[in-house]
Image (tube, rainbow, N blue to C red; front, side, top):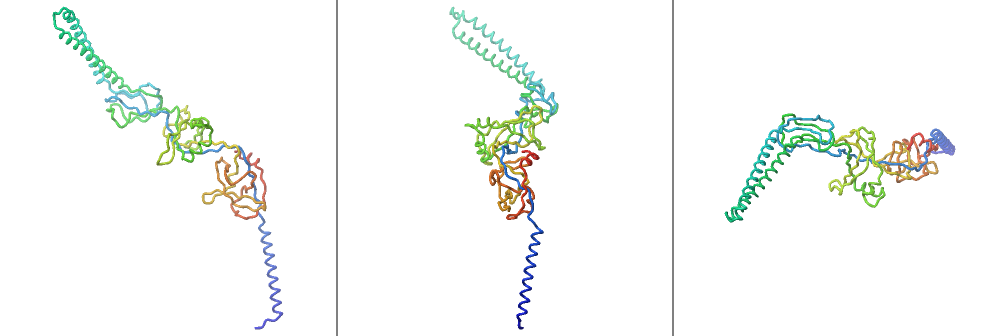
Length: 386
């Protein structure tokens, strides 16, 4: 088939018309999807307090197992489970009759021993002048003196036995060694109690102060040493600000705590070191066995602050969209050092004055052109304070 010049001309004109229509379509498409207008936040720095939280278990200042020091039947129970008792208050009574009779016998033995002392002394006094006058031999006097010494020793032994029996009688009344709250009482009146029982009569918990125990990893411990001033660990603990306690329902315990001790060594199996914070517990709100989280504050003098809604996560990393000079956005990873309810504090990735997309980042990707709309950091902080 032969193609004429007229045919070539027609094809050329058709191609030109097609290219013009494609250009117009592209222009129409560009006009249909203009650059999105998005709010842009200028990164600021501000003094702030961040918190690091650690799971904790709570214990009372004193947790004492109440046990009997004598065997016998439980004769009286003076307290109720959960009641508050003061130091020295009677808690239980073991049947004292057996120990009372033992005390009476020991008392009688002491009286007999004292009588033997008098008898032996009379014999010594009788023999001394006779020996001086050489009426009797010196051997008899020495024997009498030995008998006297034996009587004195026997009396001392009887006295000690009486003292031990009195102690046992005293042990039949079991009193509170400290003030606190009574735990569960597994025994009932009439139960046979032994000193070797594996289960105590009850657990007495002094909760005037609560100890919150938690662990620091090696890295956390090194960071702790660097954060707070002081030449020694004790000085650093004294210079550390008060800590908070978040209880099981997520609310803050009203009393502030103070760091008190750090264990002497790291646990080889966990690589952590135990730490204790002390919280006042004047109303008995907290009990041994409660759980929570200790919040350790860190004061930042010049923290980089960004809103939480300006971030997104990809594979456990946090990103923001940074606005370039050409109004195109680029995703940038950041490192979070702390947070409040509405803001993150950034330790790496952003500087004061950087501009990031505030909201509407769900459909963005690198290189997208936007129309920035600046929002005031002052108005944002006024609506959601640090």
